[in-house]
Image (cartoon, rainbow, N blue to C red; front, side, top):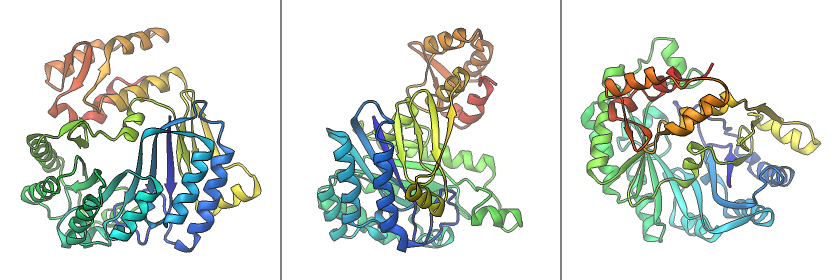
Length: 374
């Protein structure tokens, strides 16, 4: 089983980010206390009490102190059995990763860092409204490695304003040179509610054209795979089998509990999500009011989720399982559509699994929607 904790605080708003957060850092202590309470309230959600992964996401979890992290982890250890080899991840910004802070993280039991670098170009970091420099990124990774943190992932965004292919190549090669075992490389997506989204609506910012974004995508894949990284998901690459076990649990439809404002949970039968508002969440926890919305998953929902998540991975779709799932609701698997994918070399069949090619990965979301049950 898996546990996600959403830490809804950031020092400042990145111009591209659409995740839930607040910059009112004075609420960190009361929020951690409320999340400790929610862990108790939701203790029956996961029937299996053995945790294989714990993930502190956000927001910026590296804004929490060692004491605050201990409060959460002590409550988790009281309620669950954490497997000896559990993956315990903390998302972090480079500017937070001093040697003192990294040392304190290790004392809590956190054994994996996911570091939001995004780019090594300082002018682009300023455009993104990030709060660190490229040198801080490099120093943070080296400090973590020097202190014995072996499991490190870094995030890179390509398709940024005024970035050409050589900029993407520089970012990817610099990330590779850091000798980490996991790199996430994402295309910039402009969401409506963000600063970039508002600039786009006013005509002040243009998205990178699809053909150019495809070139950045293909280059990043080529560089990473040439360096020994497996593209185990459309945007995620690992060496030495260091896949993100937590994120892989989502793609494999394993059960997980989400704690904190905006966090989602899944228990194989339903999906639920917490209110995405810090004040409402805190008030509900304090007063014992409802703060969760629930959606019962129909067989069609389950099939669509399987298609959407698994098709993005190197493991692909189990065609026998998919055919059986369609038949259970008196539907036929759309084999003509799947055959078209093969003919256009968007996908190939390997030992009964349908796996996207590099060109298919470019349009993974569209391909998924083409065979969704409506």
